[in-house]
Amino acid sequence: MIKCIITDIDQTLTDAGMKLTPRTLEAVGKARAQGIQIVLCSGRPFPGMRGYLEALGLNQRACCSVGFNGGVLYENGTGTVLQATFFEPETLQEIVAELRRMNVNFHLESPISIVTGLNPIGHYTVRDSFITNMPLEVAKFEALLKRSDICKIMIADKPETLDSLVLPGKLKTKAKFVRSRPYYLEVVPLNVHKGLGVEAVAARYQLKKAEILGVGDGLNDLELLEASGMKVAMENGADALKQIADIIAPPHDQDGFARLLEALLRKDGQNLNGIK
Image (spheres, rainbow, N blue to C red):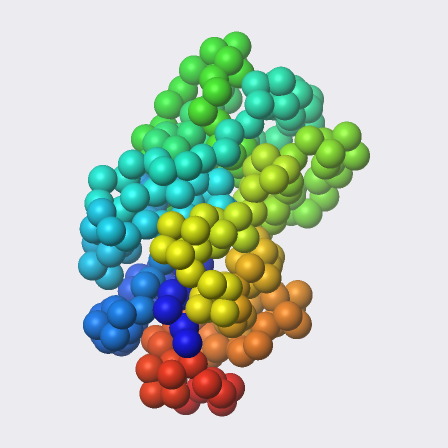
């Protein structure tokens, strides 16, 4: 029996305008009324999830969410960081030095802010700050590289720039690189992935793997699904995700998440293929 649904946000839970539809809000409410936990698991930080948590009624101390692609577990009532994985300063310095040499736009992220030493500030960095509701700090690189609270490095540039980007092999032994969007290449510590977040949620609520349903659309959701007992990929999702999924849900812009929940509540987690 499914007791917890752990879901990605963008292009999974939301529509094409990154909004929660009335049907989704209603379906989540009904699922929660039947005792099913809903947990958001995103590359976003807590400020970028707060609006969704409030709309869904999940902004309570008993609820938690996963940010930074599994790197940070938050308590939803206050945004308190329950656990987090940060870059070692030496690793951060090495990666940043290489990115500066490659002349790509990037910024750093802590659990509460976006920080950059680039001037002018990149367009996609400003966009990320706006989408995630994170304050944007500007400082000299010398100061930034001494910080011990950096969860993620975001390479944020034109899609064609990222398409042609060739990363030195040594960097791939220092961190994990995930292309979450055409204009975003996320860099997190090697041991960080959304599956780590699923494990943290399972431990917090004493859940078995079979009691967890994971939903996602992007390549950074692979580990989320792998750590879940029931794996659901959105129809608009990456092929690699759909290949490992137990269920393919309708597209995110056709109330796919809501339709998944409706089917789950009707069938109690059994034989969900062919969702209407």
